[in-house]
Length: 108
Image (cartoon, rainbow, N blue to C red):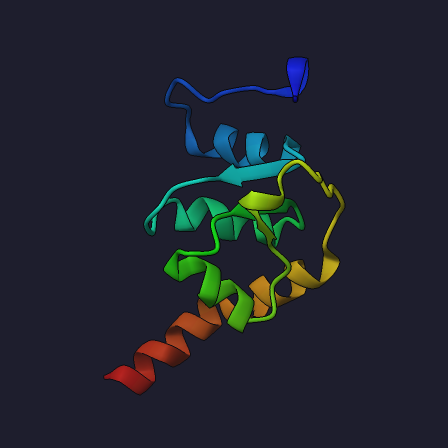
């Protein structure tokens, strides 16, 4: 389906190179059945990338509750590729350093 546009990651790379790589992708596909790759998914959403994932995972509910635009892996045959500027704003709001500090302050 993706032919020469599919680039699997098979080797470790330095963090800055990895961030550059994430910025170069158009679509993130996460078909894991449990909570995994949360940092990768948040980064891609924060870059406005299109993300497909399963709707039966806890992170699906988290992202939907926050108003983020994500796509169900079951609908992958209907590829919807576009930049999601609202996701960029929401990720900055909910997953920022400032938000973390506020949450930790309330917790402790």
